[in-house]
Length: 305
Image (cartoon, rainbow, N blue to C red; front, top):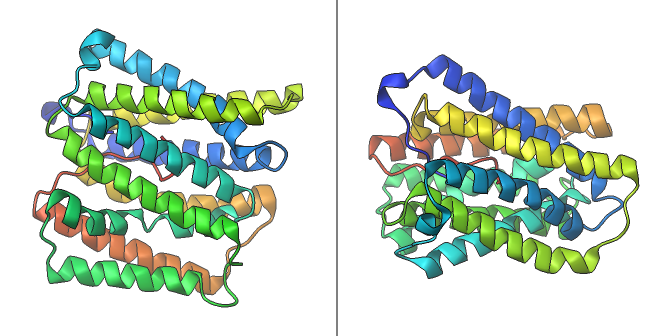
């Protein structure tokens, strides 16, 4: 989501620290979710976590004005589609968590800024120069390095990871488009309501009783969802999204650390090289977009919203 920042209140150091804190919180959430989806359906876990996000979103919207006012959209069909794409992203990410190690999963899904550049061409009519095209190409090469024969095991989890990145990239592009017509509160409310209906409508069919310890872990995912988004919103009051967005790449080393500490799973060196190529390409794209003043959407790490 995109939150306007207060130009007079910029405090870059604190904003960066808060952004890194946000990434750390979302990383813990991913680790806890990975533990849960080993024993429960990803649809059930996603549903329960989304309940927490919906509460947070409604709270944020009500702080800005009446909910009835936020429901008035100039492009309701596009807003509903945003919500569907976001939900598809979260579902795919949760399914991928079942089989793909955190480090490899984050290395795959960080291609989303590059996909945003690709999708923005036909949807938003953006013109992409040679530098950004080259960066996108380099990033895709990095993805192929990760998915090479003998690299990350090519199972259905990898397919869902790639789908997660693609859905999230489309969501970001449509969010850019919606930002020119609707308020932030409207976009946030539609995302919350559509996701709440979809996640509950599907997740309820996968419900199974939970042990109290597992339910406590679900509560942790709810708390980290609200805390992560709350900190991110606060960070955006101090610095513009275009400045803070590159720090989202901290999610990769943090995911690798959590993967080792919690699950004892290491990312292989060649896949790490591929991930570094993707990160470098993504930073080039962001730098070019900032130079050309292309709107940047403040986004949580892919799969988290």
